[in-house]
Length: 340
Image (tube, rainbow, N blue to C red; front, side, top):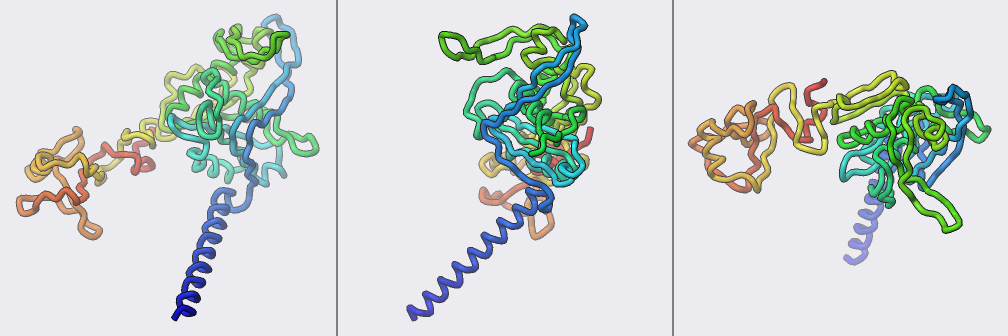
């Protein structure tokens, strides 16, 4: 009997290992867009390049472009290496999130031949550095893509086709990045590392507006970003500047982190069990449960694949999952939300 039990446990172990291996292979297949791309985990990566710009004194000079990624995932499609330089985009996340939250967008863009970079902003994910002007971390990542080359020194990214993208709060960050990059950008103050005989420190440094030589020399208002794509936020407040040729919005009125999704058609939205009370149930029976203007006033429970309205013949059960029929939904219905 002991021998049979041992053989059974061994078989279960083999099955578990096989399932784990299969999961790894499937995950790799999805994350690499069908093994058609390479993924690199960037930690404190930096590179340097140059760019030619005409400053406000009408002098055409060569300026330094310093790229930096404290924490990021870089996806380079194989066809981007063959047909380089390729278009590129940097994705960043919303509040309380990290770089991996942008994988669904980044992988899809990689499938279409874009070099994609997902980054952790300041004090998020694997980025423990809390410092940084709003948009500066994203801007530094865009510069990293601008400088990206292969082992032979050939450009991987088309310097005229670099975009930034983000979700939710990242919309504000993108707005800040535009201000730092735009040739017409306003004067601002950034945190720069300064080395002197007293040591190295991070100090607040004023940066002049527009294409002033001081601004360009410090790596600002270079005009290297040409497009943006925002999800779950609106670009109405952006001041993009002349370097931006297009701004795209994905579900701009729906945030997949919060309960701010409006669907095209009414859907059955689950109601948190800890918020359900006999009073709310009674409202549902009477058809008067109206948490929003678009709710139909009823409560439902699920039976098989069907949703049944509660009635005088049903009884409230705190363990039952109840639903409302409404166009005001939650994050589950993010991809069904109204398009802008």
